[in-house]
Length: 201
Length: 233
Image (tube, rainbow over all chains, first blue to last red; front, side, top):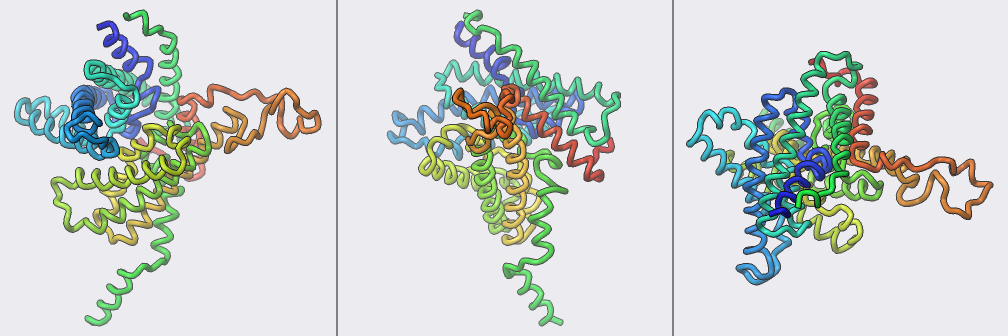
């Protein structure tokens, strides 16, 4: 259990997907103009990350691995299989959410298709492979990674909303300032590297 | 009249290379740069730019994948059903990325190891989906191919600019050749001025946030020269 909490904290704060690896930056910069939309996209990322990473783990272990169903090493198919899983799952989630809860669909709906091409999702799945997590650890990693991304985008959106009132040099307005802010937040998050993950054991 | 039309169609279908085609190649380098103007493909632009070699390899890989995914999608564009086009496009991209990854693994293992997951992340590089949706789904194969090359080069240009700055000031070298800073303790006095031996490599520039600042400064420079790109809102 301690290990799982440890991985959650590590993936959410110390190895934050958005601010240490800069994954999912395209939608991160495009959607962080207001806090409300940022929360919508952040929640969608948590949701999809928490579902796809364990699912991809199962597929990788039981289908693609050497001890899997086909009995041979199919890991060269990882990219195609992972991205198809993500695309299919996002489509499925979209349909289910639309049927079950139209209000959630309205607040989340626009962001769901965007998520298929969010590098944070595929990146997290690939990190899950390189870090050799087991199933329980990959669940915790998925939740933590999504949560960290959510925190980062909401924080940046808050700062950018305030930034609208300040006097920024014209060529830096908008995008340029967003880059500077994200860089500074990245430095701030690096301060968390000092945390000893063993403290959570 | 019908004859004239036929000739025009014939001319368009050939691999012509005129002003329009040149524009397709040149536009993404400045006015419509994928990274600094369209904000696409930023993630990998930041992660692989610690060394110039990595950036060059990544630039070539992305150029190949954009060019060929544009070409294939454009060839298939009339047969792809609208509802599942995202998945079809992703499969085309994933196939090409797998080919590039395996080739890199076979021919240059150390670089493949260095780039780790970021070669795989070309799949979700927004430049690819962006160009497929915006250009290849509506244009002829040859032009889409050129558009892909142009955008790949525009991306590579930014990557090389950022990586050169980071490697030069963060490590004091370019392409792993020492340029500035002290080379060794047996340093010759005569070279000292040339090599700026007093320069101590700044570790902050190697860390990922510094890439953000460098891209921001590039955007600043580009927009102050090219004022029509400035955000009005």
